Length: 362
Image 1 (spheres, helix red, strand yellow):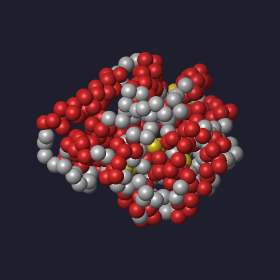
Image 2 (cartoon, helix red, strand yellow):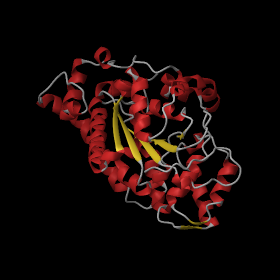
Image 3 (tube, one colour):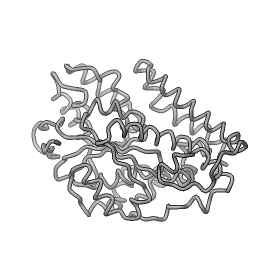
Image 4 (cartoon, helix red, strand yellow):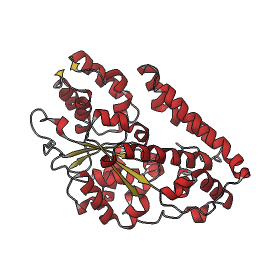
């Protein structure tokens, strides 16, 4: 049974039992609709869901086992928090955050400390009362067990999108290498991880297709609200009307490249774009790499069967993806400082460095 305790944003005095507020996590590959889902929930008056930043798991190895928090430890935590990639993009009153963290001095949990940080995020949308805290982070897909240890009642929403449309969309950004086999293998790897986690926590997982969400948004968002035990609010579909606030807060080039579609109402214009833009060769590679997981996810392969030449052409991207996940597994076991430096920006730096080899100069 979920707690009915709520946090009233802007209320005087210390926050009341923030640890009672449940968490949910939006999972999936980049460019599959995770940002759209976050925007819808951000517009909900009972949901607090900050901009993407994986500080919670990044700092867990250093602070996760602390049970008694001194003022010095809290100051160190705040200093480390400021170094986290993308945390600087959060709209926060830092003086208030510091006061709230100091108010946590004494015996408490790491999960409680993280919750205090989340509740200090200031959304563009007005909040009546926060009954639920959310976090959209692609990388959390492979760390669901850790998240469950921190928040035993946490729930997960995994959004799927056609792997061919996923690749078609990834080609337009600079944080993923535009190699068909690499992108599709990552799509399959994440989906396999989500399937495995859903079998471990069957009551905590909800799978949704991007195509269903944008085709019939009211129905499917309503089902998500029911899953999360929050009221359905029709007004969330007006999220795109906050364009001016977003433009004042974020650089224009970032908004144009990564979130341009969020300034439009929910629509179906991005469904099936792969059929018009991908070559036959690219589709063959995508279908073979996805394999049986295409059908498990509800997508029909145009080309079935195994072809040795396609497998050979796919090998570099598949091997590179496997190497990335092997290195992630190994780096996870490094000391905090080394791990933080390597994982916070390393993958993005590598992708941008190598992306020039696959994209013409613009």
